[in-house]
Image 1 (cartoon, rainbow, N blue to C red):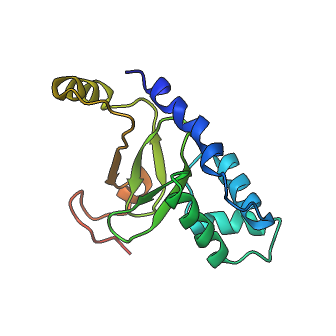
Image 2 (tube, rainbow, N blue to C red; image 1 turned 120 degrees about the horizontal axis):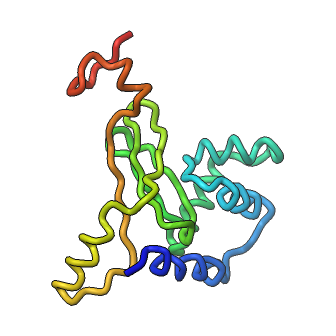
Amino acid sequence: MDSEHRHEAGANQVPGQLKGFRMTRDRRIILQVLRESGIPLTAEDILERVNATMPDIALSTVYRTLDELVSRGSMQRTLLSNDGHAFFELVGHAHRHYMVCLGCHQMFPIRKCPVEDSVDSAAEDLGFEVTDHSLVLYGYCRHCRSGRQSPGSDQRIR
C-alpha cells in the first residue's frame, strides 16, 4: 500500500473532525500555527509562535486546545521517552517518521518510510488492513553526540 495514498484520507478527515469544535479566535490562531509549521511542535513552541502576534494567549489555552484536538482525532501527540515532552502535529500532514534527539529534543523527519514493505508484508500475512502507523526512533543528534563522553553514556561533558 502506497504511504501517500494511505495518508490522503487523514488530510480529508481533519475538517470533518472539527465539526462542533467551537472556533474561537485563540483556537483559530493555534490551528494556523500548526498548519503552517510543517513540523511537530511542543505546546511551548506553539505558544511562542502564537504570542508573536497575540501575546494575551496563555499556555493553558494552548494545552486545552491541543487536548481537545487529540481527543477528536485531529491531532497526533508524540511523547519523548526520557522526559515526557510531547510534540503535536495535525493528522493528515504528510506521512512522516522521526528521529528524536534525547539531548536537545529536536525532531528530525525520516524522508522515506523505512518500514513500509514490512508493514505491508505483515498485514498481508495476517489478513490485516493497516490504516496508519508511526515510527519514532530515539537517540542523539550529531551536535549532541559530539558533547557526550561515549556513545553509550548518558552523561554529558560539561
